Image (cartoon, rainbow, N blue to C red):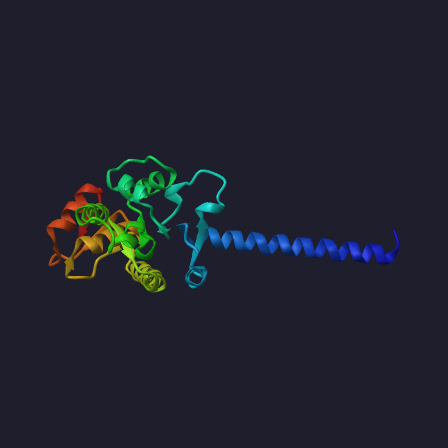
Length: 227
């Protein structure tokens, strides 16, 4: 092997080593990010805005089974009539319905684009009682905690979640308990804290906890401490 071949080999090995180091660092960074699972969501300009803060997986690109507890959010770009009804009735009769039901059972955030809900397209032509029946299924999903959002709201939605997470992190004490500074604890607030991974909270003696918040605390076994 001449000196030129040796130099080319060294350069090749150096490039490959640097590439692997870079890929390893990227993988480690992604492991620390909250994960979003998308289903039939093709609005890339929206996703580009949140890639810096979240690791995004597309269901269509995954070859293995979805590990629901590894994701914080699921973003649904479209929902067929069959999926809508199946989820509303708690019937995991297809892959999408099964995954969304698992997200609901684990208390994960589920977002569905209004523009992608199929029955909406037939508002002007459908039999009114039938259309209202489909609407009632959608309303039932809302009671399950599913959020129906418009395309323009997506970017701001995750920006709000990042700000909420930062606010939560600022309130964590040395025992990894969340210290509630608000005078009134609502179900929305305690749910947000719980979904951030905290199972113990500290309140002030004068703090008021609403009945719905108390129900959520009791149901999810959240520890309450008063200082």
